[in-house]
Length: 176
Image (tube, rainbow, N blue to C red):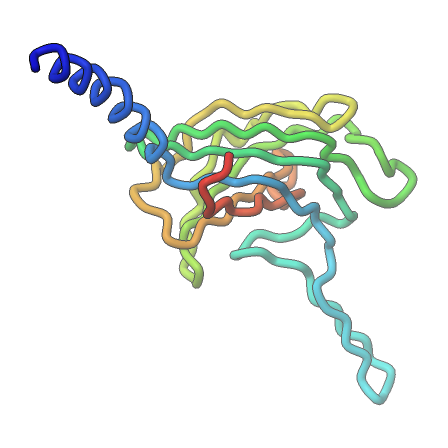
């Protein structure tokens, strides 16, 4: 009987911390979408053209298309706003520098509100450099730190102009 209780206690000691650790994320993102600067074009009967920028939760889009091959991010529910972002292949998708990064630095912004007013929770705005192939890694904290995040939107932004280059796709499932 004592042996069975010891095995059960050992089982609980191993499994419970693992299941608790699996729930320590406030938001996760798997995959990314690159920026397309224009969201809508309307041509009126008189020939007037109205172009709408692709503004995401109050953040302007860049002047050129950007693409991203992959994005993974994890915002921890640690009260500090700890965030890890791994991006691959964030490069220009048009113009004379297509397929290149042109020496950009990027930072991450998490917006948790679905409607205005929006609070931008960002990593250090100085950013991290994009590698020549567009890869980057951010290990930082968001400021202000999020407490909860009912509608997570993760933006990867240009440090120079503060426009968004890519958005993360929320991972609401159990897969990593």
